[in-house]
Amino acid sequence: MDILQPPEEKPYDRDIAVALVPGLGFSLSGGRLGYGKGFYDAWLAKNPDVRRVGFCFEAQILTEVPMEDHDQRMDYIVTEARLRSIEQNSR
Image (cartoon, rainbow, N blue to C red; front, side, top):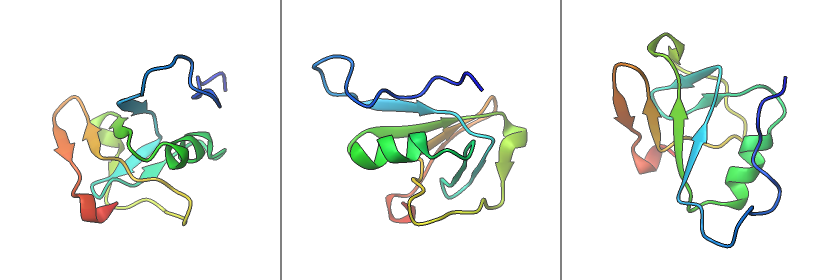
C-alpha cells in the first residue's frame, strides 16, 4: 500500500518522543484498527515510552475495535474536531 512504516532501527541517535500512528479506525479507549500487518504494533511494543498519537477523521471513531493481545493502544486520538486523552489504565 506504500504506507510509510517505522524503521527497524532508530534513524538517529536521539530518543523518539511521539509516534504519529495512522489507522482505519480508533475506539474511544485508544484501540486502533490498522492495516493488518502489525508493523506499528511491533514497533510500539519495542518502544513503550513513546507517546502514541492516533490521527483520523471524526467519522473514523468507533465504539470499539477488535483488539488482540499484541495490539497497542494509543495515548491520544486527534481528529478535526477534538483531542482525546486516553486514560493510562485503558492501555
